[in-house]
Image (cartoon, one colour):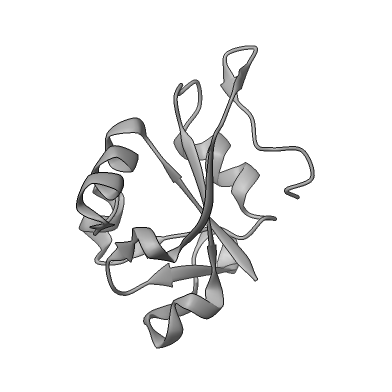
Length: 112
């Protein structure tokens, strides 16, 4: 199963340069890397990244994360995937930029 992480340009650059990251500021504050499922990604994008340009969508296969991946209640009690270790570049199945349409970042067609 694929789960998704949205990164700002500096966060993506850090992951590529260092080959691992503890994540975005919210991840550092909470002590784990936040992910979304395909169904959760649109709300995550709308809530946390409105009007942001140059975002990257990373897809990670859950099987690669082992016991460090926990499913925990978050928004509205829905279970969200949380990674309790650094995200490694080797964990990333694919990454692609999120284009803007009418000033808003857009997820790829067919993601949800």
